[in-house]
Image (cartoon, rainbow, N blue to C red; front, side, top):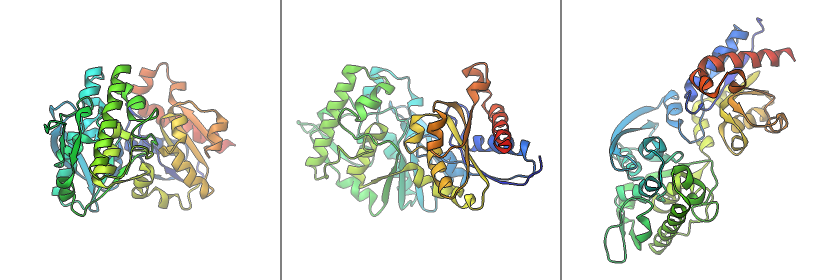
Length: 377
């Protein structure tokens, strides 16, 4: 086939298999396997969760390394990205669930101190803006550890320093944020997330995300009490009530800690990142957009990257195809989201393990098949 066409490739990561940058490369190769002279623009995207920093590096950012405390105190090598005076700090680099084995004691002890160390490092490096991405953490400490690392003083009824971790946070009674505000000076902080869970309540950080981190039912209740004590103490310190703000529960409540202690505002992770990738400019005049991620499911429709890409392409009248590790949506759901066709790697592999291990060639092959099918209609 020799028909010339312009194609924009804008996938998120395939978690556990490919970064968004690698996925974009595989999809681009699949397009060129069918349309050899196609003009392909690879624009990997992210929604503010894990993998966002890889996308920002591809957009021209600079990687800055720092040694920080991990979620259970052992030091780990972490990093953030500087781009045009903004530091993009991914919470999971310091306290990600991948650094621990989920268990009840881990869920209670994990903290965000290392996140605060990354923020402090960025401020010391001259960053005037901080964008904090909050997905994939091992912690449920409401961002208390992060604020401690930035100088906050958390005391119990006896005037003793409160320990790290969500389990210890229930003892907090007073909070002094003056050192944090002095450290921040005039720096602006934004939180990138696309979850809408508040800090507290049945849809809050503890009941929704705690079990993913190893918390059993009793631990979830304990973490909920701790986050309530934390919220109450912050309000007593002069913070505006924040426990019900949508998105505050993201990252085990680190988003709420940023709201209260750093004066942050919560924004769509996808919107924050997509403007930096060049994908919107690349869509002008494109004939086709191809997106994808590891699992195309109900969550994908709630602000995740593929839905965001489809919405923007649809507004320009550009057809959208999607390739994913697995597709758990009906064709009608995909069509309603603006996705004209899809392929799932798992449907063309003997096992999930095989699909995960061979994601790159499978993604290239299934992209080619999807494009062939689309061109024939």
